[in-house]
Image (cartoon, rainbow, N blue to C red):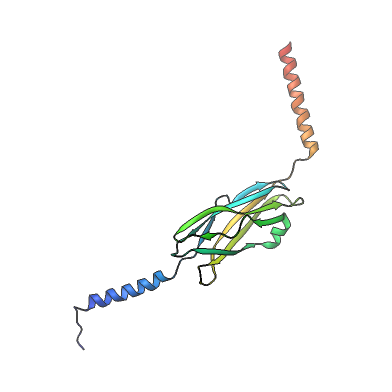
Length: 170
């Protein structure tokens, strides 16, 4: 069998083009990143989390759902969790930044730092269901100061002010 060296570069070029075409035919998944992943609040506070969806693909990507974990902890510390608006359409080869969801810290939420993850799912028009990367967010619940502590602080400040005024009046 005789190998023709003249047609070898064309064959290699065709193979590289074919494999390059196959590799670029599959779109990369949409990615998500929080703009404010750590938030602080007292019981009863409403927190709004915003983020950016980035779509490297050649088609628009419709977000269709989300999963927040651990869900049992979410129900422990929140009294409401809702998406701010309809699921966004992420433009092709672009991105979109917007408020994603709000949550209200439950009145009986114990103080502490709570770590959650969220993963979005969606699809290109007519395409299969795909998932975004997993993004983490933290809710820090701080206790509400007790009224007696505030009264004690106020009394102490008033005493200091009276002492200073008496010193300067003499």
